[in-house]
Amino acid sequence: MKKPKIPQNELERLKALNSLKLFDNLKDEDLDLITQLASDICGTKISLVTLIDTKHQIFKSKVGLEVDKTSRDVAFCAHAINEPKKIFIVNDARLDERFKDNPLVTGDPNIAFYAGMPLINKDGFALGTLCVIDSKPKVLSSHQIKALKSLAKLVQKLFESRKKTIDLEFMKEQLELHRNQADEIAYSIAHDLKNPLDSIQGFLELLKHENETHLGDEALKYIDYAKQSTHKMTDLIYEILAFAKLSNASVKYEMVEVGTIIENIIDLNLPIIKSEEIEIKFDNISTIKTSKLLFSIVLRNLIGNAIKFRSPDRRLKIEVSIDDKSDHWIVGVTDNGNGIEPQNLDKIFRPFYKEVKSSNNGVGMGLATCKKIILTLGGKFDVESKFKEGSCFSFSIPK
Image 1: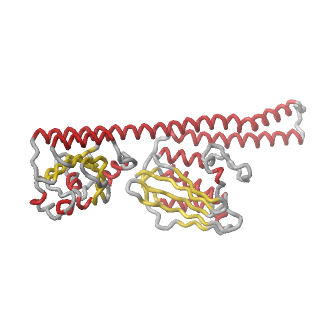
Image 2 (image 1 turned 180 degrees about the horizontal axis):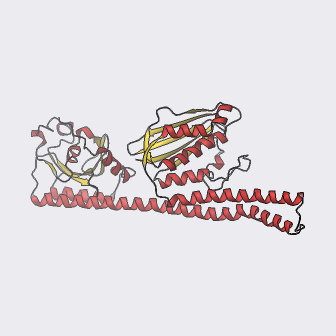
Image 3 (image 1 turned 90 degrees about the horizontal axis):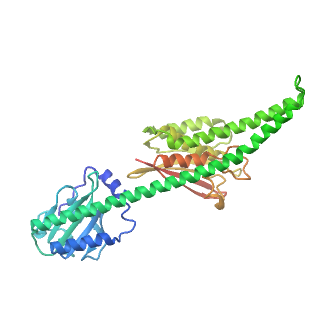
């Protein structure tokens, strides 16, 4: 038995296949109508819409077959996808050197005849096939071959429509998220800037009543108060501007040495890391391609937060990890710090959110900024935490 070759564009092909999320729900009534029609036109017992993943051929739609998948190594369709633009036909598998010892030929479903038309996306990647199968040798007429090709194009159209729907849903989620965040920012600005502005106005009003030619100690003290409020307002505005600019920034992608970025972050926090004997572990960290600037901001915030919210009961340990997946990286920052109370897990990514009992002096924009950066880069952000035990913040970076 000859095993099928792996296409040269396998990584891109699998990425295109996974982007359609066809495995989330295998049952598809529209495809079932097409497979039934293919079986009727070609006069075969079996008709399938197959998807070829890393190890299996999975049946998205099937007529005349009970199983949901087989191994890729024995799949006729795994041969078919190597020539995406051609129909792959085996008139009698029992006489074909490539297939005569194949367990799908010698055993159930006893394949003798196979015809499969690759299902390609708009970029030319073969995701699977529309195929017809029979236990008896067979020769398709030109009319039947033409019909099978037409039905395969119809399946491709359904896949393209599904991809557009997925993309639109993702865009809708992002727009909704940004809209909600904009509303929250507008509210928070009005709320958080009101107090310092009121203070400034009040202090200046008091200065009006002072002797215009001489300012005493009390007046100078009022000026200091006004300066403090102004500084607070300025810091807040800078954080808001940084957050707002993220969605409009042009992202520059480059190869990023993650280890070097972590070392720079350690240098920035070296006094407290040394004094508190903080351990930061980042073994086997790979190089990734992304925005160096935006990635650095996220990592700096997450490591900085771990340091700020460390537990007073134990020495802080932070570990940065990267999991290399087929079409994305997953970056994790794990610590054994204070952790987050369960009722606050859904609040920590809100702009300006700060725990009431927190002694931290930040303005509460760090995690909101991190999440927005990762969304801007096309990834996802997640957190797992156990209160008083530690937290793990993770995010994906598409390849």
